Amino acid sequence: MADRRVPVAFITFNRPDTTKEVFAAIRAAAPERLYHISDAPREGNADDAVKVEECRSYVREHLDWDCELVCVYADKNMGCRERVSSGITEVLSKEERIIILEDDVVPSQAFFPYCEALLELYADDPKVMMISGTNLVREWESGQDYCFSCFPSVWGWATWARAWKDYDASVRDWPERKASGEFKGIYGKKRYLFLKRDIESVYSGKKDTWDIQWDYCRHSHRGLGIVPRGNMVRNIGFDREDATHTKSATKEDFSYTAMALPPYKKLPVIRDLAYDRAYLKKYFGLQKLLGFLKKKLEKIKK
View 1 (cartoon, rainbow, N blue to C red):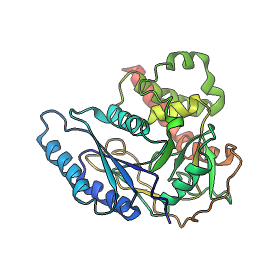
View 2: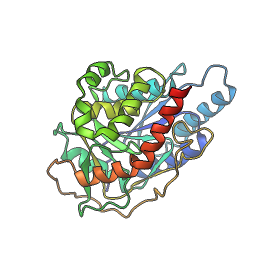
View 3: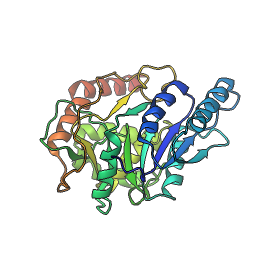
View 4: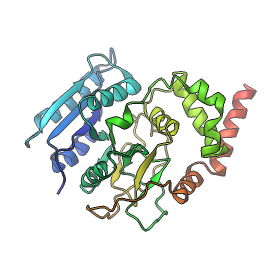
């Protein structure tokens, strides 16, 4: 049985259909407290105005269990980066720990007790900064219910206020860290090329996102995330016209995996190099590198 005392933060914008599907999973878990983080419509966008209000009102009107609803609504459109980051910061100014779901990630019911149990087991370990509900390397097996990785996913996740406190949406110290070269030795040259590109994109303001900065925060503090043996979350945001970051992504089979339920054994906090190597090979292998270098050359020619 899930410990309903761990609050859930639900992040929505203008997708009523996916919002309803994720909310159904939250409703089944019945947390005692639900934070609804919602951005405001973009200025002059009438379609946004209708859909944002539909998402907000749906959550309010379908809260039919004993639950405190805390509405974290923006009055003016903030964009993905500022709305999500400021919303999580506001929630974690009031809570010690939180489970976080965006409007396109549908958790299985095993996800909630998994997060709750591991939030308790590693509450005081600064090396563990988050718990992910998604395993992006499906062919990997360790024999354990979970492992510790440098590359956990934010498709359904949980964290603590003590881990989020150093988060900086502007990554202001990036020039100093880049000059030091400290990330090169930790993550390898190939991964560093992509990491550098991503961090530059948010430092310059070119990309409106919040999760690259969270990766950066963990990397900067040598923090690890917990990754489950299989998937407890389905991403339903692929290939949609209204997708923010998965519009051009390759859809994969992220269906649920049959997972063990608590109690979980507490494990030594050691980075699972086998998982991380498998992750890097899958997402930053030769083909990905060649594509990256091709784009760089095309830019130079222009």
